[in-house]
Image: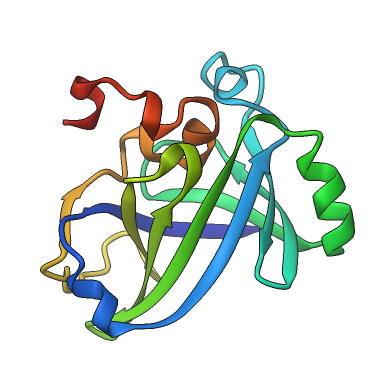
Length: 167
């Protein structure tokens, strides 16, 4: 079993761009939706992702917060395209920029399409209590806010958020 320990932050400026050393285009969709998770009908999200020239099927437990079970399986890209056509909700398109800061790899997701305007940074940790240096461009922590999860963005994209949801 894989465990993901991840913290998520809103990005407040473009200062990270100069330090980005790679960019990976991503398109992803979900076999289930946020309503199935919220109702308790399903206990895990099932994601199909094409990233660059590779594709994966990912299963992630439904816990809110920084620690979740995660399983990732490679799949052929042509099959991933077929699976994306079966997904519910919209597709999440983004560019993931890799940035090293404070000895850790940060992933800065710049969303496109219906989620354009949203930029979120994530850092994966070895343990839940691991200390880390937060970059100046990383603002408010949104780890525990479900609306920033990609599963939620597929069902209720950033372009449809109210002013209160964006605050």
